[in-house]
Length: 108
Image (cartoon, rainbow, N blue to C red; front, side, top):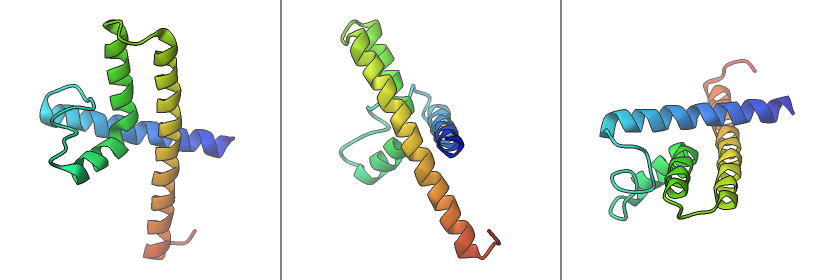
């Protein structure tokens, strides 16, 4: 349980840092829209979505709820998806970090 909680916190941290950095660079709120996600730059869009996706999802869901475009149940569903996404992101980041540490030959 502790390892899952740690992975979730790592994912949340990566997501927050990535999203906040993107907001500072582009000067706009992070969302599934231009300039962050575009069909002309698919690779960049995938990288941005992988790193800041939960942040983007929550921003879009909160905006939609404020405008009454989605229900409270849909908002909760988006929140649960963002939590699962953050956990998955943390697991991937920890796996990559572990792989890099082994690749560089540091003691485990």
